[in-house]
Structure formats: C-alpha cells, structure tokens
Image (tube, rainbow, N blue to C red; front, side, top):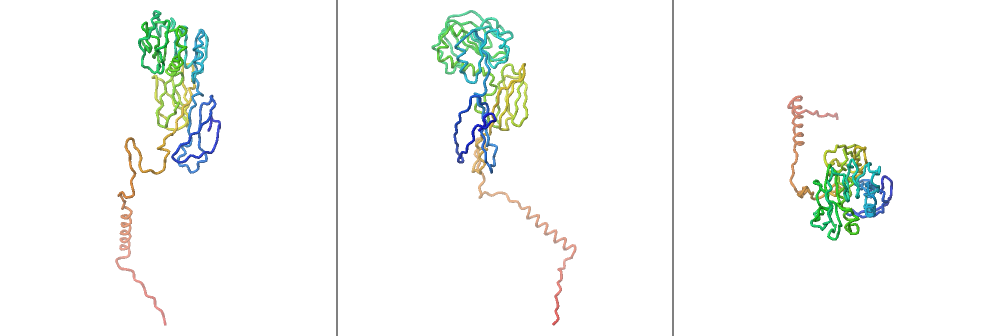
Length: 372
C-alpha cells in the first residue's frame, strides 16, 4: 500500500479464489492518492488487475472565502464542513480579488466587478443590480411553500422563525422557501455561475440554533460544488465517461493521462464528458482561467471488472441480456478436407512425372549369379 507514491504498508495475505478479503488502514488526513498493489505474482496471466488506485477526498480541499463583518455561526459551520478550507476576511479585503472555489458574502455588498465564481449570498445588500434587485423589506415570513429540491434534503424548515427578510427580484433564480411576504431562499445559475441567496440576516432568525442549519449549509455547499470538477469519490471504471463540471471562470480543461499524454478541451458549455479512460491509473485534472492554470485534483480509473479478471474457462458467458453457452464436445462442427486433396493431387503429379520420363514399363531387376 502506497500513499502519494510513498510505501505505507506491506504485508503477506492469502485470498482464496473467487472470494474477497477486507483490510482496514488508518490514513493520514493529508493523503491524496492511495495505491494498492499485489506483488510476487509470477505466472499471473492478467497482471492488469493487480494494481488499483483511489483518491482520498480529505486530501483535496476546496478554498472558500467568507466575507463578513463577523458571524460566529458561519465561521463554525464552514470550519467543520469536509473538504473545505475556509478563510474569513472583512469587506474590502484584497483577498477578495483572488480566485476561490466558493465565496460567501454575509450582509455586505458584492465587490465590483462581481467575482466569477460560485457564491452564497446571505442578507443581500444594494449595489448588485446585475444579479438581483432589492425590493422592500418584509416581516410576514410565515412559510407558505417549500420546494422539493436537493438543497432542502433532510432540512426541517417548519420550526425555523425569521424576524424579517429582504425582498429580492432575481428572475434567473428559483424560490426554494417562500413566505407570504416573499422568498426566503433562492438558488439558480447566472452567467455560468451557481448562486444561492438567503434573503435574511442569520442573526434575525433562529436558523443557526436549529439542526437544519448545518444540514442546509452542507447541502448548499454540495450544490455549489466548490472546485470539485469531478465527483470521483467512488472512482471510475475503464471505458466509463467522466462528467466534468468546472467552475464558472474556467476557460479550458487539461487532463494528464497515466501514459503521459495530455488531453485538452476548451470550455463552451457548463459541463462536458471525458471518455478517454481506456487505461487504468491516476488522471490529473487542471482547470484554466484568466489567472492561469489551477490543479483541480486527481481522479482514479480502475479495471474493477470481475468478468475480465476471471480468465478461467467457463460454460456460459453473459452478453448484454443474453446468456451464451459454449460448444460441447458432442457438437458436430466443420472439418477441412483440403490437406487430403492436396496430398492426392501431389501423388497424381508424381505418377504423371514418372510416366513421362520413364514410360509405362516397370523397371527390371537383374538376378545375381554365383559360381559353384
């Protein structure tokens, strides 16, 4: 077992044929790539499945920037979300101009120009009319509609109370939680960006005190998908297409394949499919934006095919939905007679040659005489 190219553990194990064996290791949190390899396999007729890789998700963190005057609830929740490396800055910080996978604006105006990345906007402020138009503040926050959306999965909203909220007009966004006075949560895509909006101040509600708060933040973060262009938690099989969902500011994608060749594609859509996965191994993904190339982490492709790994003769094979039986010894097949015909033709030619050169008389043999 190797971690990021360094040997971590080596042991001798015995696995009976047609069976499985589970082993457990405690891996360092910073581990990115895990490689398992079988050795001392002389006589193995299929060495291709003696090695496998996986990507340790804790080794690939996404950068998030929380722009706030101070919000303990946000700091705590983004401090414990998995695979998120969060930084907190006040409004006007120079760090806002740097590239991040996700940006959270808590009760502050958006910068000009608006960052070309996925965003969570809490308590939206005036000054961002290109994305939304603030309307009147409303206090009639009794919930009247909750959309069936993955962002609200496992979120129990019925017990959440909001004192007041900011009316927002955003035609590109869908209202996920609506009150009598207006929407409380909106989400949608604008200019190839994913944006979620909470129209109220967290301090003007009891949402941070509810179990729904960390679940809602985790769901929103997963939907915004900060920087995780490939969801390869379970890995991919050879020949399987890999969906790639780059961030909004990505202009091109390059992938370094295990054989050392580079795959490159310009971005002209929100997502694309990478289908050149014929070789097992680690594929390194790089996203390019206006500031340069940014490594987006690896993903693993493995053989992981029980049918291909089983190379012993079998009685039947499965082809799609059809089971095909192999031919048995009693089956009548075709037998080729041409070698016999060639042999007969050769004999006839040999006889003709003899007759032509020697005639049709048989050779005479002299008797030997002896004197007594």
